[in-house]
Image 1 (spheres, rainbow, N blue to C red):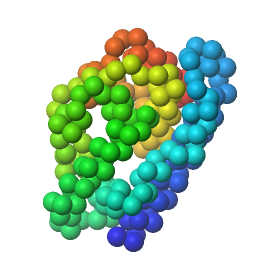
Image 2 (cartoon, rainbow, N blue to C red):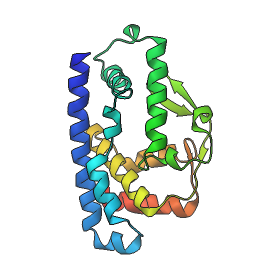
Image 3 (cartoon, helix red, strand yellow):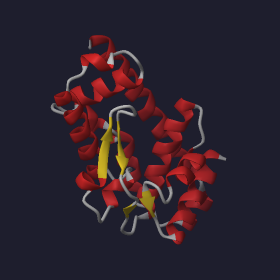
Image 4 (cartoon, rainbow, N blue to C red):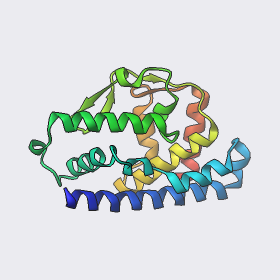
Length: 188
């Protein structure tokens, strides 16, 4: 568990650094700032608090176990059903409390809309969740998070967004266009 804790904290530190870099890129893009209504203070604050809730008592252990499982530092046979329930609980709390996750804007009950997939060590939508209006600032925060994860995974946040559209999330066309434009500006 100590190995997983250390690796998770290293990953989280690196991820937060990347998120900050993408937020700075968004803030320095004057064209993007003219195009969107952004709360600059909220974006600056995000650089200080992004994903820190994952280190809180009651949440850190499930996130460390999840990280250990996803990165093969912990064997699935060593994780109890209770641990998996705690991981699901921690994930749902995190995605519903933080506006850099689209689940934060869901009009659906996320607890019943998502099931926990042990193989993916993640929550999976049973059906696309409906989202209420998402502020431009939160679109930028979400895109910065996706770009940071994609940098680490050497993947494309644009491909990720297109792959979850209509499967995990139900988003109107205007908001979809905004997401794609922000991702193109940050990633392209």
